[in-house]
Length: 242
Image (cartoon, rainbow, N blue to C red; front, side, top):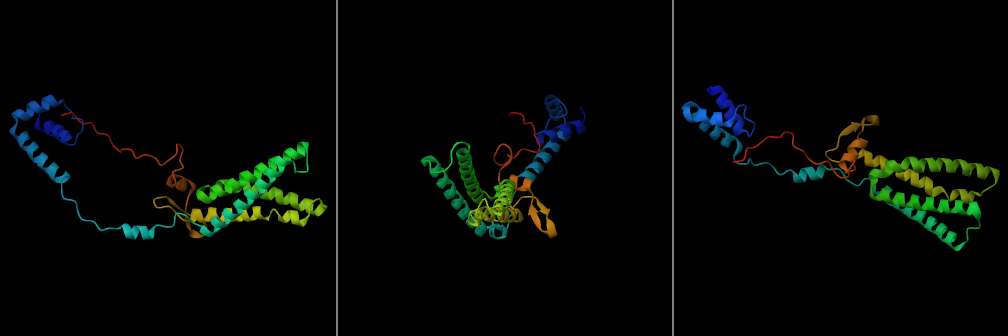
């Protein structure tokens, strides 16, 4: 074995990497070659000097970073208002369910079942709005559902009002749903415009920067499988047992 191959193998051994030749051959050459033995002593000393050294003093940036972190719970006023609308929606649903259980719906058969479906929908909508108040990143998922419902309900309400099937007071009773839709949009927009530290930024309309849906999912731990992705090594090295 020549000295170049020996030193290449010794270098790999110092780095805990696989040696290009059998270790036994390297050890036999090392025992008979004083030049390689001296090279190994110097290489070991250099390795220790590089890997083991005093830690350098670094400035404490905790206060500066904490001051620069944007609020994690945006649109506080809109969320509080949305919580109020959600509670009102839940009261309506509970009132409907109570009337259904006591038989005061004023309808029977298919109409009674339709009344129960409406009560169940109002209950689910109220619970969904309360969930968004707690988890603002879910506002975007509820927007298409509530927006479609408000649009269809508005069209039917206008038709019934024109034809005299319902009264203006009854139509105005649906106003909280429109308010909930507006508040839901505000919460969703404010959430997207306030990036979580470490999330990728994307340029929005007007040059504003916001966090994309994937960035929010990664930051809030909502990726498939639940929770943030675990850290993985970028390289693997084999170490020989002593």
